[in-house]
Image (cartoon, rainbow over all chains, first blue to last red; front, top):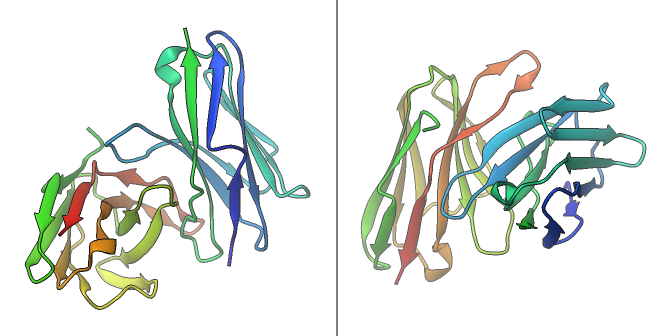
Length: 111
Length: 115
């Protein structure tokens, strides 16, 4: 079955810096991969989707890359703000068009 | 608001109780899902319904019984649960097309505690 590793359970960065979160997957190569944000006590909220034939996707201060050779996706938040503090979930497609979620990285942006 | 509403938000039940979780989506989507989220664990896909037909059942114990009466409503019936079933239960919906399921819209979840 698919195994997903998100670089660290928690990441602290200074406001204004760029946060980089890593998602590594093994076994099956997904046709697409999604990133979600989850705040405490809430359901995840979709941020970005990137397909296997795309190298990079951007949305405002967010950027996602997808390296199918390395089996890795990187998620960047530039000019980070305290409001960006949340848990970020990586979710590659599992071969059956469903999503397989990682445990997430809890990001804290320090003012 | 994500357009997906779950009730109740919190539920405490004994191991011999029977209860149901409800989910309703107002987005016109054709697929609905139940996920389980336990502390320190990734979201686990439990059930998937496409056009009201169940297409996934990921080895979920029979004490969890889903029901999808129409494309807007999804239920999860619970009976004789165990304390390890305590978790956040999340409902989601999506619009599936030929390329697969696009982004999921999640409800806020039901925090379930089994005593």
